[in-house]
Length: 333
Image (cartoon, rainbow, N blue to C red; front, side):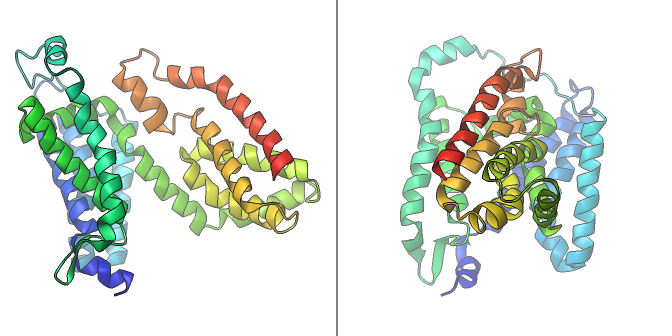
């Protein structure tokens, strides 16, 4: 059975995962609108409602309206999300999921048991990923074979959530309420990795890598290995700072510099070249607010007064590691 048929005959397909995400996001949107303590409750609810449309109704839109119109509608939704976030129209309310909840007493009661559900997620994911290809019920695969890891992660999260209920005595409603508290703390930065991944695809489709290749040929001597290595490493860091994700920057810089110049012309070893190149990209991750899940969200969760404080502390280390990467690439690759 080919991969397409495997996906079509899976009980837990990627569409089911999207529907689960959409339901949770819509519940958060509704709770946001109903929270009178949030001064921006309507725009906050609208933001998360718009975000959940693609997950919950994307397939239905394509089936009824066709791909071109559906993609245009989703594009308008993305612009509306940017408008709401850019206009500072997201807010947060007061959270009292347990009126008498004492966090210190809660921690003393359960101690290290609180970490068990979180630890269970990667363990279950790894186990299911290793055996997931063999799990079948009749002619149906249990897990989506084209998105096996994501399907395993979804099951792991659900099992971990049930385990957390047993430990703490919580309920699904409390889980969604706590999810909304975290979502409000993170704000628009929560969806930034998804948007930046889309941006990386746009750059690839626009053949930005070929443009970089032409620009490099015009500005420097392609026979200079050191100059190419410096531009490749620094370029990976800079593109990552723009995109917020080294994986999004990698195909652009690989197509523009690594493949045509360093690999094909100077016969560099591909494995260490791309490995050190990715590490150079991670140096850019440490220095940009666009990497919101690494730099902005932790600052929000820790309630730091300066939301860029994490980045400021990371910049010296990032620059030092980037210089070391350039030296290593020149000596090893």
